[in-house]
Image (cartoon, rainbow, N blue to C red; front, side, top):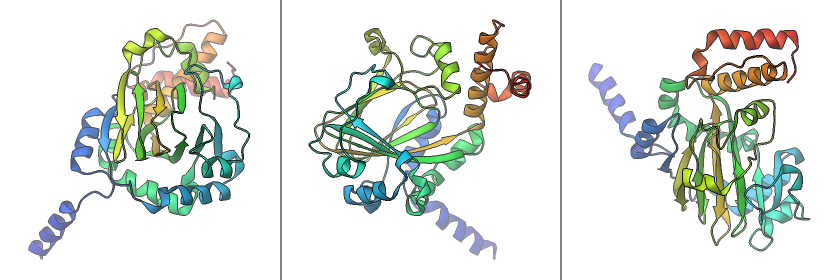
Length: 296
């Protein structure tokens, strides 16, 4: 019986990862959670990520689950200045090769087929994540469809994120986390209250970034709030973004939210450490401030 159990365990352990192979998992483990790192994946030919399938998905999704606009944008454009492209979402995807646009389908995990695809991909990384930052919380997936030469402006995201390149290529330039030159404290505080993800761009920042070329089969892990921008290549690009929150990312958001309220009352702000989940007193103060109804 013990020999049978051992054989079964060996067989299970030897099975290849569905999305990320052993080398990709090792690279991810060495970088997570604070450093970006290039990876590889095995979803390039997945039928759910073809353009026809994505056009069908877009048309059955709620209107508020998509964002799309022109792709010929400067790196530092303000949210209110972002122009639309004059097309419906379905038409944007169908004519993506010539319409000069950028589109994202949000929370595609709400669709059962895409939800299963997300869970399968994350399963490969779950042991690494749980050992470092605890359970994968708020798991979500996004699909980016972009015309040739489109630009996604300089911004940050609140989640741990892995971008999997499916079709064509792009260059993602990622900047270090915890850098108040690129992300001032006031921006982190506003972001924790639902402020826009776009950041103010200055050319002097370029020396701080690292550009990574992503072709089909490539991926990149981007830490929480690591600033980045994306320049699409010469073809129609499709990228699948898998994301999750952690106790650490939630705690960091709480403490920046606390600081926003302390700043509004001209009170001293707390220092947000690299392990905010362990700042028990500050997190308790955040809850007190919430109960008191303080606003930023």
